[in-house]
View 1 (cartoon, helix red, strand yellow):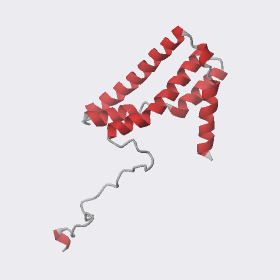
View 2 (tube, helix red, strand yellow; view 1 turned 135 degrees about the vertical axis):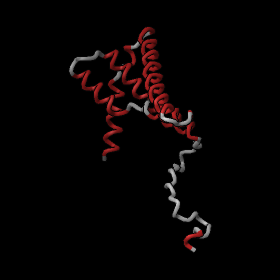
View 3 (tube, helix red, strand yellow; view 1 turned 120 degrees about the vertical axis):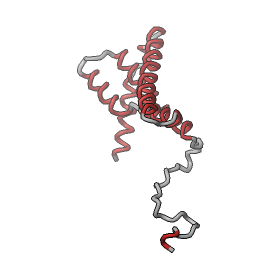
Length: 145
């Protein structure tokens, strides 16, 4: 039920954004905001993760994953619009940014992680193995024989 309501919220908020308010300069502003928002969050997260010792691929994946703005930003934007704190043009730009960055996360993260684009069989991460668990098809460790 929650998934259905969440999807409905995305649709209602997305439909309440009026793209006709964005003219030539508005589109340029939206693109600049999108680039600044994405690059800023990506660079901050990726560089911080890299500084903690991760390799570049893992750091880039963290940067991409943290660019998912999703429902929290849409709720805040809807409340700000209702309260009269932001106008229709800025609301539309920010909703567009939230939706585009959220939609881009999955394909970018899959590409960085090396997963295939085939979504018919979702892959899950294998459970970590401890040293005491025997590998499938192998004999028990020498100390247990």
